Length: 196
Ligand SMILES: [Zn+2]
Image (tube, rainbow, N blue to C red):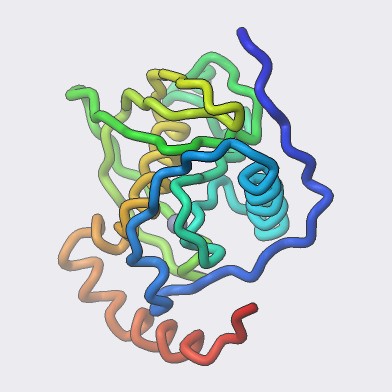
């Protein structure tokens, strides 16, 4: 298995963007230069994700629109219903550039999800168990994986962000209605949140 570039994480966390910030609805633009700029952005995003104890972060969540997301799923969360590893071990954190997800028609499963851009909000979301993913790594090399379970869920959540899709869009109508007041307050609370 080839070596992954491991960007340094000696960076200060960036300011998170929250629900109501229009950047969260902006579609990402393809990354075409695999240079120091994108390496530094990846490192800063990893630092931000880790500081916030998240398992994934997409560019829009720090106010950017490059098609890049980072994943940091601990092995103990990457398990199937029997407690066995759901995937071949991947070196974490993963950096996915220009990712594209294809759903594999198979069983889907529901689980509570959270999002760093929606503090204290969770909701059950049904997603496919297995996905096929193509992406480029930090060297610009094309990669292809089939992922299952929680890793597949996190990747879908982050690739949704890159397409301007938020997890509330995938919640049931009933759940969204129930969250209406909290979402309104969240929007108001962070409307004037300081941005760099
Ligand atoms: Zn999210």
